[in-house]
Image (cartoon, rainbow, N blue to C red):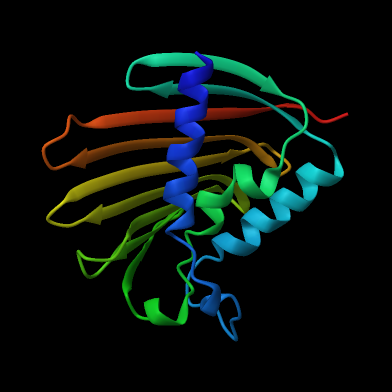
Length: 185
């Protein structure tokens, strides 16, 4: 099982390493929901309160459960931070649909990695953020679904990352990571 955990960490590090864009970290305006600001505020809250997490990981059918007491929240939530709709290059790239409790940002072009973001509220209270990512080319397809849920105080309650990677000539690989905020002293 320890080998599963090691390979999974290497797998996630490889995914996260290829997604950063240091040139797009400064903004003058935001056109869409500011996921980066939301996640950074949650990271600050979780770190200042020394929150722990109960984590479940599934990788190609194998399952592992653990409680993490010393969490590097910046690393833990890196995929969410990197899902930035407000990069200057993405300006005007999403169709926005609003209803009474849901705002959906849908990619206009199929080649964008961030395909869809749903922001779900109950009145003014944030309840859930859902993100669909897709990388697709001739060699591989990588689908990721990210979900963050929030409590009544709009603090992160849980998060989930599901992924499916299909590489040409290889068997598909899938994973799920679920984290529940376990303890805030």
